[in-house]
Amino acid sequence: MLFNSLDFAVFLPVVFLIYWILLNRNLRIQNLFLLIASYLFYGWWDIRFLGLIVWSSLVDYWIGISLSRVTKPQYRKLLLSLSLLMNIGLLGFFKYFNFFIESFAQAYSLFGAQINPSRLDIILPVGISFYTFQTLSYTIDVYRKKLSPTKDIVAFFAFVSFFPQLVAGPIERATNLLPQFFKKRRFNYATATDGCKQILWGLAKKVIIADQCARYANDIFNNHDQYSGSTLVVGAFFFTFQIYGDFSGYSDIAIGTAKLFGFNLKKNFATPYFSRDIAEFWRRWHISLSTWFRDYLYIPLGGSRVGKWLNVRNVFIVFIVSGFWHGANWTFVIWGTFNAILFLPLLLSNRNRSNLDTVASGRFIPHIKEVFQIFITFLLTMVAWIFFRADNLSHAVSYISKIFSSSIIVLPEIRPFNMFLYLLFFILFEWIGREREHVLNHRFFNSYNWFKYPLYFILMALILIHSNGTPEEFIYFQF
Image 1 (spheres, one colour):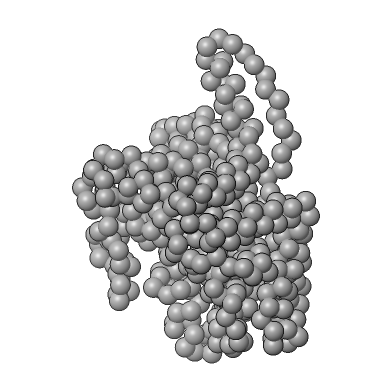
Image 2 (cartoon, helix red, strand yellow):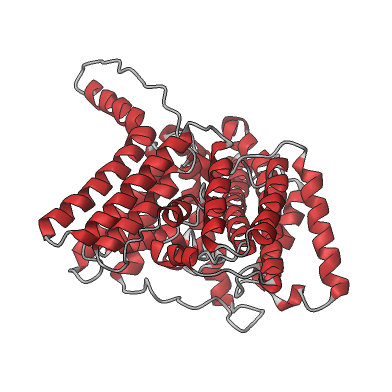
């Protein structure tokens, strides 16, 4: 079920009303209802996918309880290894099996031998990369004794499958989300209205920005050999905003929807395109994934506590694994490696934690130096996104090569005025709200009724106008 679909527009208010009006007095019944609603939401794509999430939940529920009963370190490690093997094994099979088979065949051909491996007709279960990492955080934290295992199977299954963030995050930690299933939840009008505002802004990002940018980005990337280098820059520019509007829009809808049911999810994006260097960008982009890799991969490898060159190794491992997490394609590996290379000068010069505050904090106008830093970081990020968007490595190389040709100085063939106007207002709104949880939470958009209500109406009208009756899938569903 898509957030931007008519199905969800019916599903959400029905679940909301039953949850608060009929089931408000019993917490356990509320949790059971959320579990049923989440399974309905997830099974809407393909009911066969439910078997995997139920199995993953059951195994990690049992492992969590077993870890609390076992004291010998070797047995505890065995249980943790079982969880890692099961979760990563399922993810590896469904997401990477064909990739590894084909890569092996290509490597074998370098020695003059040709083999034709059989591909399996595997359907990638929606959201498997997200809920796999979410359940892993539970077993790892229980193993580390940072979290006590739960014996409430309903609450645990609801935690794993919580529908607002099930399919594309944020990837919640058990230490944050799971305890919320055991606390009495009371309806709060202010929180609910703020959630509705965040849902509205998320839908605007998705439908008005991401989907409209996609029309031009897809055309240019799919036919890059027919366009000038300047037009390819436009294509990369539109994709840069497409993926941000699409993914951060989903996160906003997820967080806003969770608020309607009395839950607080972690912020997943913090205006990353206003970053002053690549290190700051990665502290602001897909925060739940970046911090997951930091806590469960980077720090166990030694983090920054080891020597400089081992630290460099750890950084490259994290970026490459992060790239590979996004998909079974060498383009994602190169994308991760490219970001590691961009990060390297900051690490070696000890400047990777220079910009921990928000740019121009307390000021509306940034300094010239900050504008320059943002511009350079944005350009480097835009180049990296070309690898992310390309169908394969040759496509990416061909695309970038044509950008740096003589045709880059000609006027782009595609220059939609309305899209540039949308982006101009979008950037302005994001800049105004860069220090808030979300844009429509800023007092500028809430102080005057004569301004905020027409703004809400305009956003809703534009969403309806650009919906075209057929909802577009979110990019991160494929991951």
